[in-house]
Image (cartoon, rainbow, N blue to C red; front, side, top):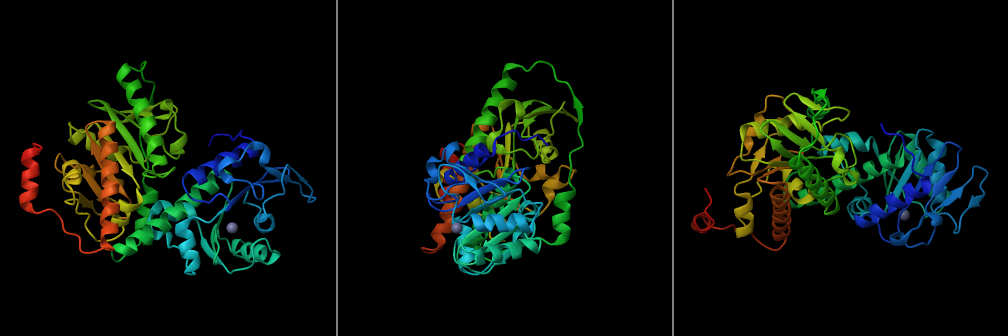
Length: 428
Ligand SMILES: [Zn+2]
């Protein structure tokens, strides 16, 4: 793990900026805090525009209750303090009112995170804290009691969500995964019966690993440098467009017959730089870096399909909602969707974790994208841009189908129309 050298002021500011950009808080709602080694609690201020926070706006509250800062601390400071007192292992807290988790909060439910192995692992034990007035000691007690039971991700009745973590990056990751599970459940409920994972299925995902030995590559040739830049740009764009989650999913590009570049494991996708991508060659990976755990699945696809130049495993909410139901994602909706995606296959749970390469059987020239049961989507392309473009088309198609269901009966294009498209666009 890399050593954190960011000042708490900057960490809070950057995380708040990101939560606001991802539309997971309003300008007035939400607050973040960090407890440092000296026992000081750094917290976002009360009544300051969350879209324009500066480092000087962050308040430091000392253990004796005195505070340093230009503003008073967040009015929710009492519950932050109560959680830190109840749970010495928690060093950072995120509180906000993101729309999906608020929907659960007003239905007095907590989302079942057994939807995805990642959400289940990252969110930890989830809980539900009964209502009390904002800013009150009673609310602090209600939340701290729920955290005392070992919960790390807690829905607040008729209010929002609070998550804790061993640092702010971890708390943010948990917050994002929890909201993602909530959003997907809401969309999936509009489609049909939602399927959850059992213990055995969760274990299969956790047990996978990567087995490459390390090597020292020669100087990077121009094509490798170009692909690093493209991957870096598109991964960042994917996070910002909410097609990728910050800590899950993988993106790769083929360098030559047996080499490709891929996202590193367990790193924040939005912050990746070009030299963070890992070069994999045969059974070896670049010295000093760890390839995504999906690297063997990418490799199997490149080996079987010489035309594929880029691959992305991602979790866009709309298409992922299909992945947690048995409803097929039929993309014969508009010409663009069919021309780019052709027929989207479904991959049974866990195929992509196996080391027999069978995931490669689910994609081809006529099946460039697939829905992975309870694990998002897989999209291939003839370039990094092509894969990204298809990922966007897949997600907008899924969203359109989900929206259409609330208006009327979805009618897909007929076989005659599909044939005409195949002829016109020269599709095999
Ligand atoms: Zn609140």
